[in-house]
Amino acid sequence: MDQATVAQESELIGDEISNSTLPEANPLSLSSDNPSVSISGLIGESFSDLPEDVDFFSFELEAGQRVSLDIDTEPSLVNGVINFRSVVYPALSEIIQTFDTELRLFDGDGNQLAYNNNGADIDEEFSRDPFLEYTAAETGTYYLGVSQLGNRNYDPFTARSGSGWTFPEVGVFNGFYDLTASLTINDTPPTLVPNFGTLDGEIIEVGSDELVFGGAGDDFIDTFAGTGGNRLYGQSGDDTFILGSNDRALGCSGDDSFFFLGGESTATGGSEVDQFWIAVSEIPEAANLVTDFTGGEDVLGISGLGIGILLSITQQDADTFIALGNDELAKLLGVTASSLSAADFAFAASV
Image 1 (cartoon, rainbow, N blue to C red):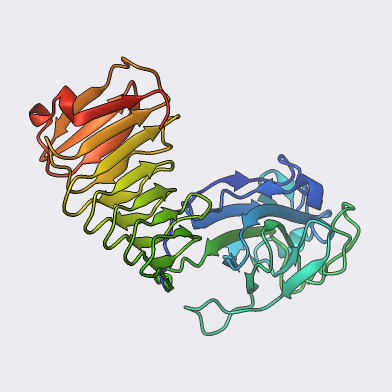
Image 2 (tube, helix red, strand yellow):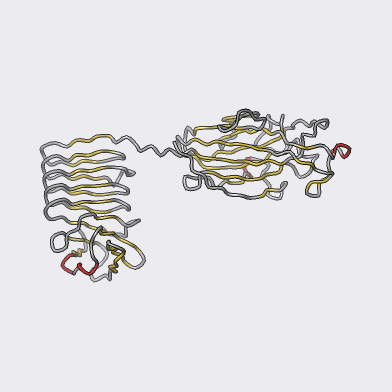
């Protein structure tokens, strides 16, 4: 398990950005690409509102994703005024002020999924600040409420419907907090599920994270309906591969054909004459990789985009990129751009 961290800082002062109810929740830009977000917040428009106020935040989770939500507060000497707000108890203005908070996690219907008042993060031994972890049972939008200690029975759809506690004798009411939301990123590679062909040619429909062996015969192996992560071996015979996204295919022996319908897939033809159809009736969503193209033997195919289209062929280090306008179609590993000729390409109105 690895946890990547990218910090986002923003200031939410009072209710300048109203987020006192679940429908008004401020979205956190939490995602797999941005797995950690930190925000500084302030409860209440004034100290008199602080016991009743709630700050709401929203974020998206996929089923099975785990999020950790951590509040940290720092004591401060308010000296009578914070951000032009008068201290509730002026006689105690020289007392160090802290803020004790509670966290409640909701689904979109306002059902409470998790709650915490005092919880230690994984790197803490003890904390009066709340910390909770939650694993999403289903994909959707989740909502976090931050409130003062004791304000734990509010209606998430009604502003100031609950009330917390104040302790003037110890000064627990300054309202400031830091919220960190983090996704746990699982870098463990998935376990591939074996899928074996037979001695006869057959059609093999492939899902996701499968390890496919075509066996003998002319096989038709289709991954387009899956979500990627497949490893495909055609083995002997003249095999046909329909590739979705993020798959790896090896033709092995025989005259094999590869049709790239998605993006970021990798194809290795193996021995004999192979066809790599790098655009089939539309531009792929991302460039695909061909690892062993042999000029004068293998063929690069383009279909359904019209005859006479103008391709750009450029050299980048030891590899060649083929593009149509601003769209990259394919990367040819270890191929010199100047070695390609019209004879290496096949154009068809349809395949």
